View: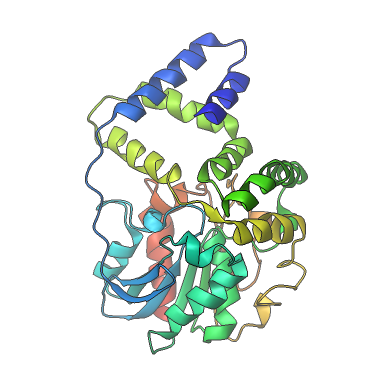
Length: 331
């Protein structure tokens, strides 16, 4: 909360009416009723606190790998906004979710690459058949990293960074400064708190962060629109701390060193993977700019933002249906 209020003051200097409206939106968000969350399917395999959850369906298996940073529920947000449940009902593929769960004691020394090698690969291999992989955000980076080891049938990445030098210089500098300020605390705790990561996301587009709470202040209570805002905002503000080894690799090796883009990570050259590749990017993404994607295989450019492409009003038309078609044909 202190970090949010500091950002709010900066963004509304000279506009007290905007600050008041955003604070009203924040108050309404905090006091809003929360619907019951969807119950995830049972795990078919587990490893170090992570689970592989089978959503069913008649087609061949597709393992979805979400980011380590926010909860995987963005792929199964609500009855109306669940890519995984829609795919299972569609029937062309059998979606499974790699739910990272949380076990700091077991994973505090696992880097991002370590999560791929020690968790993702064993869980995927537990299927006993060759799956397609779909990764969202940092999960896409990790899906490419896992693809060689598990001989994936196909790989699709959605808003996934690979060439971290494609992020704007000011964003990389801001993240370097954030890590410099947070590193000692993270090493002492064994993890980087979610609040620190959230402040980084706010800093990438602070104006939009303030504007969305201003807009929420004007929404009619009890409407589907207001309920959707609360559900999505709860997801954005939720998530476990990031294990310190993963945080260190994320900030020092990926953002600062661009080890993936320079061919010094798990999969040195994504273009050399012996399977079909799909690279889905958003041209309006402020979290993961399209210039940072791997840029290999078939490229699809969308006009929705980082989260909007997944759960926005047009998500089914612009992302879910084309992805199902590609997976049905290639994966």
